[in-house]
Length: 397
Image (tube, rainbow, N blue to C red; front, side, top):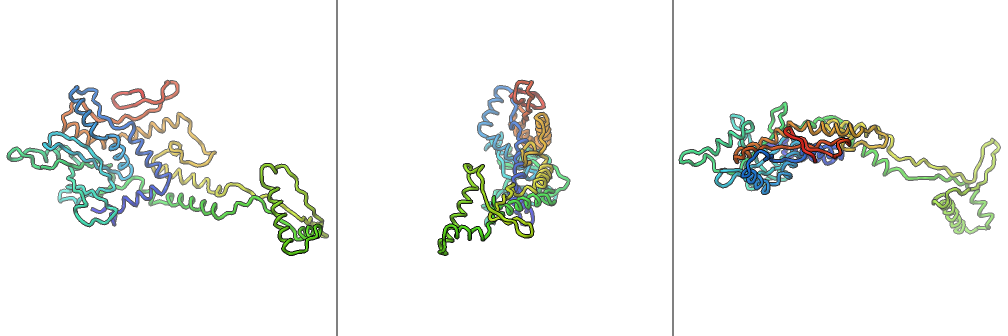
């Protein structure tokens, strides 16, 4: 089933995210908050033999890389794909891998609504042969454990129904629609106007900075000023007159610029015309040098706040609001905001833990359960920087 009309939807989404510094920062922040303190297999209530088996499994699988990857897939696309690989005899799970969601496509569902396969390939390019596509059997969305048991159930002659030892498990965020590929909650950002408004403000500021000349002084010199110099110095040759003009201009520029020239005085002559106006030979006007583009400061703050609001990230937590005078939260407020952000990851962790419950149950590891502690920042009176918090216990960090 194509993802989008041309099967390129995830790559266009990634391009839009990577084209905006605020949006890309919010996405990685959400993934890091979902990661918490990392996925762990809690073996505190397990036997020594079970602890040894779990440790061997963890040594052969990079849970940190896997878990951060699926957290990013969850936050970007609303689903992630985990691959479990069984031993040759099908007695235990020996590997767990992540397949990047943007390279995964679902096979068409059968008459009962069940999707049989995941198709993994580099869909950025045209696929010329079936050899470039990896076909992976997909366990049932709604009951992966029962489906795995059914596939490995012995048939006639005590042989399992399926010889497959590699299965895909999809963890998906439930959405109001029922399409193959869920629509992320932040999709409204691209359907509205604020994403384009923020980019237009940046383009306008860049154009204004590029097209404005950095002029500090405007010097007005009357023609009679040069005639007076030529007469006083007896210069009649046309070329020498031009050289003298350049020399005098350089003197004025050197007089105005440079730290060592600050505080010096410039004298110039003037007379009053019959109508009462002063006529100066030399007038030096200072040009305002305020930072260009300041007229959009409030607009860019508003656009950034709208994007952070859509991404469910408080702008103070990622430092994305520009300027020096914006209101800033206290340390206590930021600590509470960070705690709330981590607490809201509970439903996502429950969805991500499904594959690990299956691994633990299939391998027969009694007393083991998956856990993802989150980091709770401490107050100064506790004499510690942070502590790990789980539903079952609290540990100092």
